Length: 159
Image (cartoon, rainbow, N blue to C red; front, side):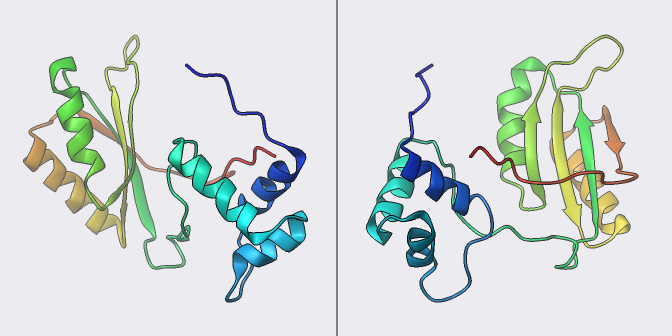
C-alpha cells in the first residue's frame, strides 16, 4: 500500500470546496478556483491527477433518490460461497438498481457475506427486484434489512 498523498494548503482548499455542492453556473471550476485562490487550470489539473492516480473514482452529480421518485430501498445481505464471490460481486455491481455492493466477513450466527443496496420507486418494486435477483443468481440465503429511520447520511469530508 502506498503512503497517502501530501496535499498543499491550496489543494486542500480546492478539495474542501469540491467535496460539497459545486457552484451553480456555466463555469463552476472557475468559481471553485476563485474561492480557493488558485487558477481554474490548477483545479482541473488537481482533479485530473487524482482521477489518474485512482484517488478519485468518479466525479459527478449525486442524485437525491427520494426527491427523484425512488422512495424505496433495502439492504440485502446474501450468503455467497467463497468460490462464487467474485462472480456474484461482479454481477450485482453491474445491476443498475444496486448502488452499493460489498463483500464482508461473516461472523458467528450471521452467515451473510455480500451486501447490496437495492433502490426502487416503491416497496413492491424493491421486493420484485430482490425476487428477480434471487431468480437470476440462484442465491436463496439472504435477509432484507429495511431502514426504519435515517439518522445521518452524508458524504465524508476529508478537508
